[in-house]
Length: 121
Picture 1 (tube, rainbow, N blue to C red):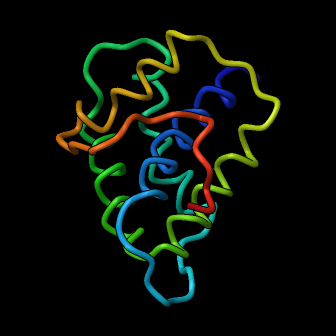
Picture 2: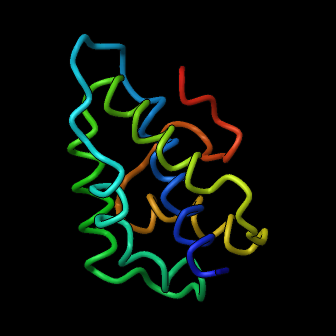
């Protein structure tokens, strides 16, 4: 399903950017894959069609960003999304929309978002 692939791509890109933020902290990851998906499902329409992200999308992105405060949380979320996206098709258009989503939601990240980000760093 292309829609599932796009959602998973969006999730991966958003979480990959979160995975590389901040210094490592010792803590057990508490965010599940189902948490990630439920927060990012409202972003599917934006990543498919562009325009303005829905308020629920930005709320989910910001909530997830706020919950992923430790390196283990960020790494686990990143790995979950990368696993879900593995083998799913996406276009450059979808990738560009997903990469721009944090900024569209008012989150300014100091690095580029890329599906090739190493979740272990």
